[in-house]
Image (cartoon, rainbow, N blue to C red; front, side, top):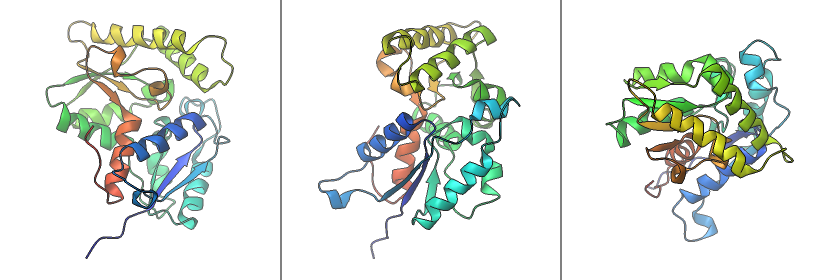
Length: 244
């Protein structure tokens, strides 16, 4: 008997363009010849969720009530499980899980599992993410549990990454996307060349970063966390996926 496919719930809006990219990647990883071969996906695109980095560093409102409310909206809409195309929001994952019944697929887990399975030679990675993700430390902790060391930029360089992320979110930034990309490349290259052991791979640890940085910019494996999450969601929903 064929198993019923599960409905993917996307807790989005953080930011909207990353949510759109997530949906595109779900479609890309689904083997489909017709409309009917695709998965049902329910998206709650709520850009009003308070800033996650500000909350993590103690300078802003907690996003947990809004995130919990969004999960409940997805549950009522028929979602069987939830993914969150925002890495920083995963800092609050335990608090969210305690208040909802739907399972949430963790981006930390799927990235750590992907590196272990697909890049077993990589023991040190460079993390490009928001200051909230970097300072929160939970991504690094999950990677360490998989035997992977994480390198992060110093505070000065980290401020440039945050500027790049906010510029990507800005519909009318003061600089071009190629200028943003150049900053991200420079940061990644500094982590790759770090002494004594440089990064053997770069993680796009913020879902905005893949909008400006790709494997073509890297001399080492580029780990697009959002792409891996989308692929894992398609698998969880019960559909075979195209190989990465």
